[in-house]
Amino acid sequence: MKTLPPQVQTAWETHEGPCALATVDREGRPNVILVSGVRVFSDGTFVIADNYMNKTRGNIDGGSSGALVFMTPDRKSYQIKGAFMYHTHGPHFDFMKSWNPAKYPGRGAVVLSVVQIFYGGEQLA
Image 1 (tube, one colour):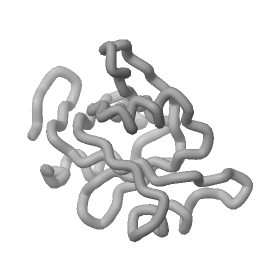
Image 2 (spheres, one colour):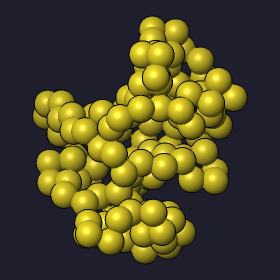
Image 3 (cartoon, rainbow, N blue to C red):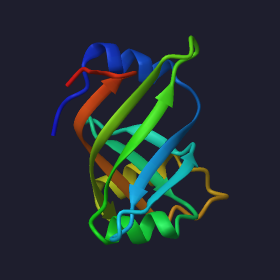
Image 4 (cartoon, rainbow, N blue to C red):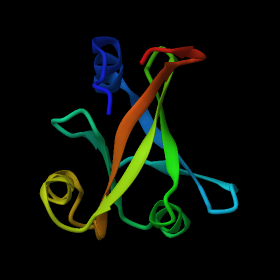
């Protein structure tokens, strides 16, 4: 797992709008959803609230790696690629429950451990 460089930390703190979350199924077919319930955990991993994931959850359960894409106010995009884990209890789940709005189910915490980081087409880490 890689830590987030300062440039990426700053970009994340100012990002706008929902993020795109991409997974693949066992046959390699991509699935992309928009997610707004995303935060950075203290260890530099991203935690995404599973409120209504179906195909995405199945892909993660099937061993999918994936990517999270976000955009800054000046329209610069960052892509975080990595490995997923799914938690229904423990510190990542508790963290997600602490900020996920009560009106959403928060069925699980999807944890994206950073493997590669891109700014546009440039690999940063």
